[in-house]
Image (cartoon, rainbow, N blue to C red):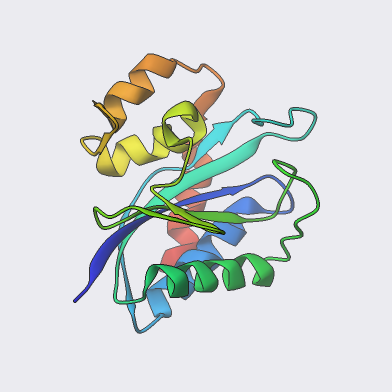
Length: 171
C-alpha cells in the first residue's frame, strides 16, 4: 500500500533548478514512487549560516511504497548525484532533500526524524509546503497558520525558476 510523503528541496550552489528537476525526474522514474503535487520555487534568505548565497526551495508530494528508511536512502543518493558535499551544518549545497512527512506517522531515530524537526520555524519550508499541503496540522496549527505567523519578507516566489522546473520536467 502506498503512503503519501512530502519532500522539501533546497539548494544554493550550481544550478538548483536543474538539480530539482533532475531529482524530480528520478523520483518520477522510480517504480515505487508516484510524483504528485509540486509547489512553486521560492527564493529565500539563508538560514542558520547567513554568509552564503540565497537558496531556492520547493516541495513535492509523492505516493510511495518505499519504507521511510529506503526513501531517505534514495533521496540521499539523489543528493550525491547532484554533487552535494556535507561540509558544514546549514552550509551551502547543490541539493538538499528532506522528508517532511511520511503518512501521518512519526519517526524519531538517529538520522531520521519525521515529521522533520523545526518545520514550523522555517519560512523557507513553510512557503512551498503551504502551496501543496496548507491544511496539514503541525502541533496545534495548520501549515498556513504557521506561515502567516512567521511573515518572513525574505521568502519570495520565483516565477522564472518555477517555469524552468516545469519546462525541464516536461522535456
